[in-house]
Image (cartoon, rainbow, N blue to C red; front, side, top):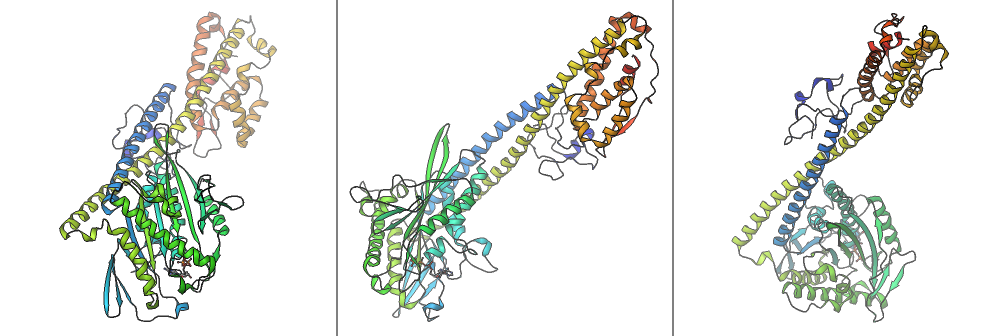
Amino acid sequence: MFIPAEKDQIPSPFENRMGALKIPDGKNGIFPTPELPCPPTLPAVCTDANVVPEHTESELDQLITNLEEEIVALRAKQKCYNEKRRGLLNKILDIKGSIRVFCRIRPFLWSNGGRNEEPILADSEKIVIKSGGSKKEFDFDKVFCQNSEQVRDFIVENSVEDVFVEVEPILRSALDGYNVCVLAYGQTATGKTFTMEGTRDQPGIVPCAVKELFKQASLENSASITFSISMLEVYMGNLKDLLAPRPVRRVDAKGGVEIEGLTEVPISDFKKAIWWYNKGRRARATSFTNVNDASSRSHWITISHHGEASEGETRVSKLWMVDLGGSERLLKTGAKGLTLDEGRAINLSLSALGDVIAALRRRRSHVPYRNSKLTQILRDSLGNGSKVLMLVHISPHEEDLAETICSISFAKRARAVESNHELPQDIRRQRENKILGLSKEMREAKEECQRIKNQLKKAEFLLVENKRLHSATCKLAEEDENTSKSAKSYLKESVDAPGDPEKATRKKSLPHFMTSTAASRHRQSAVDGETHFTARLLRSGTRTSMHLSASQSLSFLDSRLKAVLRNRNTKLNDEAVKEVLNENPNCNTVETKPSSMPHSKTVACSYPNTRTTFPHHRRRMSDLI
Ligand SMILES: Nc1ncnc2c1ncn2[C@@H]1O[C@H](COP(=O)(O)OP(=O)(O)OP(=O)(O)O)[C@@H](O)[C@H]1O
């Protein structure tokens, strides 16, 4: 790319009056392209209107070709680093385990009778439950204690774990083409909805994930990435499509969950995604239990990511975010009738999920997906290469201990098959070091991707600018050619006219080349001050009209085009005059009167910084008439 790497390399004619080159993002500086040295002959095209770069058509051609080549190379480099980062993340997640189980402890609620003795002690990866004089320990991949925050923005000083920061890497996998499932479960009123949805001030995983997906997709700089959203509610084994114009229940002929044909809405940005998400939320049903005023039923959101796998092939991956209804033992919640049945169904589903996870981990030939609606729906997000994140929610209250132990036991079963905590200390340490090394490499690859993205943006901007300038230059060259032809034939006729060339001139109407061009008309209407000056010149008669046509071209609004035109007109008109003089020996007899105009007149135009000088040859042309 023909962009100087250091400021002092910029050739002086391209510096503006402030002494600095302006770059497209508005900052003063230069584009950093250290690995591509700037050829001395072709300086960068400056996009500042006050700077007057002068390039020939072939130089511009060369610039465009080089920029196009550089864009192709940068894209290839970006793809390469993206793949590297993707591979590293996958390695990290594989070491950590593709099924991860986190535990979140809800803070004390005053509605639950305030604070009593705390039965649960939390560590970063462990909780200890004190019950009847005994202590039981449970390990997790991560424990979020009562004062944990939802997202980093809301972390106050000395605050502890941030939920979203731990969820984020697994979301990244969804963009990398893996199916991902984030599943919140636990007793009623333990904060599942709070974690998944959050509040206006403390957004939960769903809004943060959607935001992050769009952010990450924009970093990929790929137009081929698109997203769509579907939402459903599962109640008593029936599936309700929450985004259908009228929510519909979907049950197949055998009573199984009919997930095919679920409404899938394309979402182009975060705002649209949230609009649809809120629409789905409103269509959801909640019911009152003894424990929670607005107890929600199991609801599921899936964001499908459509990305390019290889040339022309589309890869679809799904991110499921599931908020399972309360999984408590049912007497306590006062659940009756349908609510009671639904509670039972959720517990059965969790148990079936445990069986599926165990079968997958032990690489059994038969995986019992069909045993529950939950595992049927999540089938494609639980198998090979998928990532699962389970968020167990527990209450801090002593009277909820039985429920808490029940929820934790299920989590223990899910992660028991392959747990880091059961490994010897030295192997664990080795794994941790490996993760640290990979994380560092991944961070570097990510930074490199960002750097390439910035370079690409600038190169693409320059390409558009250069193409624009190139087409304008071609257009002007064409106009110049026409003008030159007209000048030749007009001068020829004038010189051929016997005796009195002035008389011959008067007889003729204004020749074509003296009339204003589209560009000069545009300039004329835009520059009021010059219109004044032009009008004065017009009044002074045909002879001055020659000056007028020259000055009109010179004060063309775009200073870059003006520069090109100035060069070309100088060359062409000089050549035209010389050619005519050579062709017609009579022309030597033509009286070359000194013009009434001064030899050099400076015209102030609408740009305060730009003053244009009438070139000498124009007067010579007018003197010929
Ligand atoms: N981490 C937390 N910080 C502050 N408040 C919380 C937290 N977790 C839960 N709450 C509050 O506890 C109450 C119950 O939470 P929520 O409705 O999210 O529970 P739930 O598990 O989704 O219940 P259900 O299963 O009945 O739908 C809400 O008022 C919520 O604001």
